[in-house]
Image 1 (cartoon, rainbow, N blue to C red):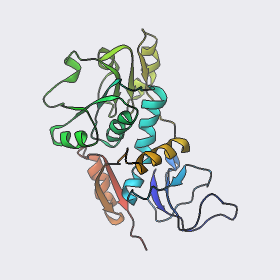
Image 2 (tube, rainbow, N blue to C red):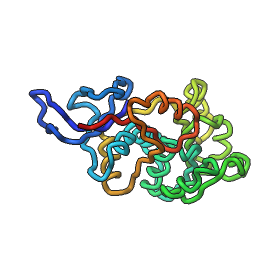
Image 3 (cartoon, rainbow, N blue to C red):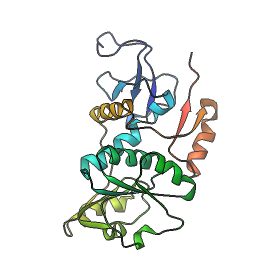
Image 4 (cartoon, one colour):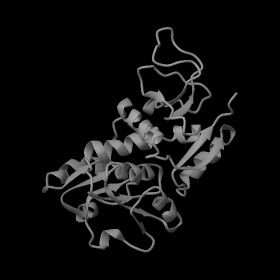
Length: 252
């Protein structure tokens, strides 16, 4: 669904890109990125690649980045000095969420496993909670925003951790979460958001700017060559990855 590469050819009417330019593209549900070449409209979700990002890092920017922006900034509207809890902070979406929340000035608590505590701290989390040692839902602590990046927590538990006027976000939730979020929002002043994130080129431009200034670092767990794509999918399916897994093609 997302890729980074070099433009090999342009349509005759394209003026906003150049042959040989490095770009990030996000076909989204159109898919097609498991290929050596892909075509995409020049008016679509494609932006120049920041020069300080490798191709694997750039390829990992779009999906998790636009999703985190959609939910944390577009829906929850996080503000400076608010407290944000991110569940699943070491995954692709979680690592983006930590950095984006910090970019907007929030105080971030990340929840992850013991093995990934150092990673989550290194990308800017103010505090890291090891879920194998502490059940944050039973701690009595409350937050302005609770962002469940892995769909691990029921909406009722999320509600119990929200301050008055807090916002609960489920980015990888079930159909029940998607249906239940607007219903839960009717019960009091706490709001809930779930469903599918919007994909916009404006968000991609912002992510690219953040990466270029060093405010955002896509986290890469492993890079597999294309002939090991089966192993790449198996590793992702194991549930043990931290950040992103990227498939790379040999470059001429």
